[in-house]
Amino acid sequence: MLGASVLVGILITFLVIVLVLYLVQRLPLDGRTRQIVQIIVIIIGIVSLLRYLSVW
Image 1 (cartoon, rainbow, N blue to C red):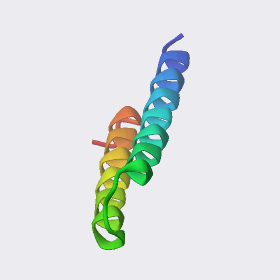
Image 2: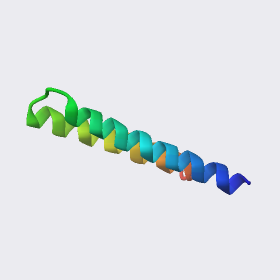
Image 3: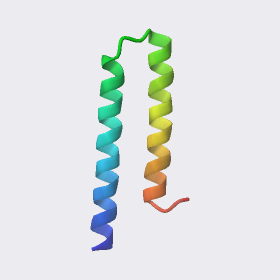
Image 4: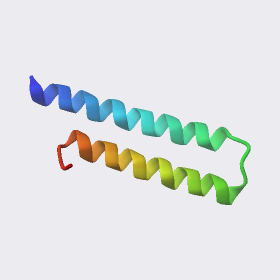
């Protein structure tokens, strides 16, 4: 049962990352700022996924 809860947490985290990246695309930002925000979101997402996998 523990594995299922970890899998659900990873799935929810992944969906939130995709949703935030989609919303960033919808914002009226210039290309450079949008790229920086996307990189920050991806880094935060990777860190949170690694925490779910108990790497940290």
